[in-house]
Image (cartoon, rainbow, N blue to C red; front, side):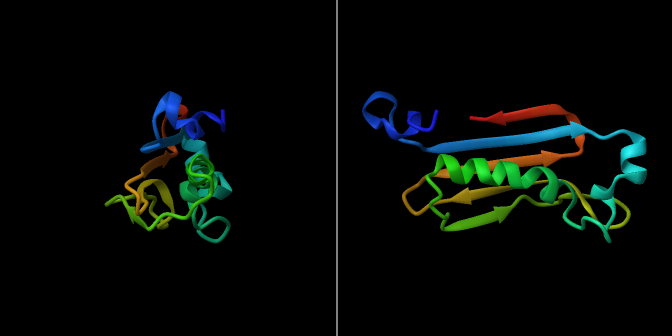
Length: 113
């Protein structure tokens, strides 16, 4: 799989990576899980799910750091201010881009494209 984006003669160059990781947390999850408690895991969905998305994006781009990253506006926060859904876009100087979305509010989804 890693070789796929590195064969531009066959597949073209890597231009865009999309990465998503979501699941639907139950009411019990939102009340008791450490991932939604600010004193236990203040990064919430970003710290639990988002880092997998970010890691996949960096892996697909051979761990080259982007020139810039822009958080998507209006992340979803719980009453305690913990992130329960968010996303961001990454940009490289050569025109490559990537987007990720992670959420505790959506049906189970894991995607890297």
